[in-house]
Image 1 (tube, helix red, strand yellow):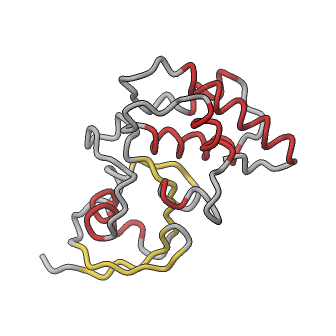
Image 2 (cartoon, helix red, strand yellow):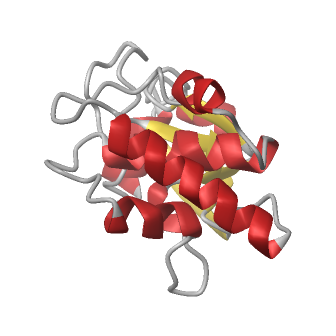
Length: 164
């Protein structure tokens, strides 16, 4: 099968790549664009390691064909921070010592950012539900929940729903 031109926006920048029509968005991001933040953990959309935002919505990039992103906007963990500064949720993850092995963290951060973009004052249940699609073998999720809750408080204090 012939490769096709994929034109889309990644982390705020217009990009083009030549991809096979059957290539996943995850593979296009990692192999064609060199963005290794999204990880392949399961390949079935169950672990959350490959999570990205597609037009602002959280998706498992291993389940999305790259060509489905044509003309759309994708944000990966590499594009979450703006202007070189960590977002409040990224900063809270660091301060709470959330990252351990780091494999799941990009996906969890993308889930947290999606939550905080939609709900500036999430309850603990809201937070747990939002990150439930992310498997982590290193933690008990408690520090993640605390960090996301703190980041939501930071966003409220700034009057911004973009605490992610």
